[in-house]
Length: 486
Ligand code: HEM
Image (cartoon, rainbow, N blue to C red; front, side, top):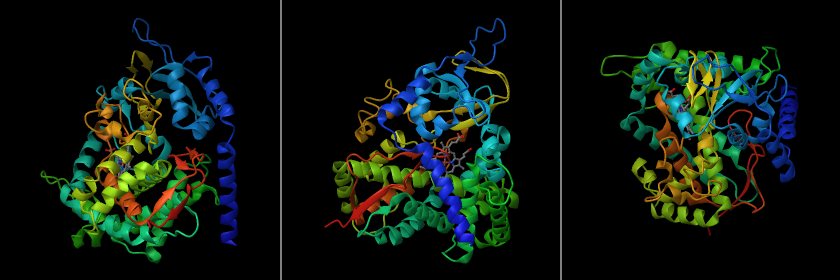
């Protein structure tokens, strides 16, 4: 019965998502985006007299919903269209509020460096605090600095070596077993793999009843965080997410004492043992909150990146062969961090993929004081969306920005160095991703094993459609046909 209900709910959800993302002739999509480019602009808030500042231009879109549906359908194509229409700072209706979009290298730099401390993480708390309460990304200013300093102790070179070895072992057990006799949906396969990696590397758990319970609770939290219906009513995603959060809290709290005593090499133990040179440590509550957030931060982002890299290698077989040659040349020894980082072609492909399909295309803030960006006045209390992925297509930084061209990251071209904020997949400023190195190593390890075990291609006419309801995921699960190497 439960399974039937679950199937029915999933079908409704998938149908809603399919309705919003239904493939339409490209001329219609172009026309929908042109409507964004041609919207009549109105000012957001009047700047103080004599300030020399201009108001933020923009438009509401639909009453209430604003431009939420266009964002879900078009993602970065939508934020780029806003940038073309209004420039680096603009506003629109979004999830029942007005949001100011900040895009382009200069404007994103102002917000991310946050010199006047006007931008807080309240923009994230507004969206996900119920499920990821007091995760590092949701903390602000002095408190954030303290927690970041302690957490850094769980990401030292020595710690990363242990996480990488475990990741490689887990990936090597799974990737070669993917079937080659029928098409597979790669995205769910990768999601299950990165969840296994997180369970093993972060908690040193092996598959079993408890690991399954934790994984389910965690998936419920992630789903709930992108739920449009925010009512705690049985049967809703929100309700399941709140239950999931309680299960995760109980699990981590029940294990924290044993982890403190264990001296283990997993991330959970590392957070328990973390101590700065000044003797600062995490409380049990801190460890619980950070673990729940870290699982989310690490899991979805790596899955999306691996999916996008697999698609791009499938669509560009010459690059797949080039990357494979380097992977095969490494031999059968499980690669360590240095070996993974020596795979030049694959690493460039991953960087190019992070540019074209940024897994975190926007980061959220809220102003805590009146401020200005690029001469536009923004009042206190304003929700802000920093659309870093727009920078990834800025023609002043990148040649032919819509073309897949991994060598743009090679010397002497290094187009990513044309501006400090040209390439922002991991964000910038004090909240820049703390898992950047581990996340990159995990994706490299997955793709390395895929290249060693399988050859794949995608139909030349196939274009993945990305569902931007939360982070961008392939709406059709990314169907692929894996074949043997020989
Ligand atoms: C390809 C993989 C990843 C991408 C693209 C990515 C992207 C990002 C971005 C854009 C931010 C900045 C958020 C902001 O400014 O508000 C961020 C923050 C963060 N990420 Fe990642 N991430 C990835 C993997 C990981 C992994 C593997 C971990 C943990 C093991 C992780 C942990 C975090 C944490 C804790 C923060 C908050 C940092 C802070 O506020 O100081 N991420 N990530």
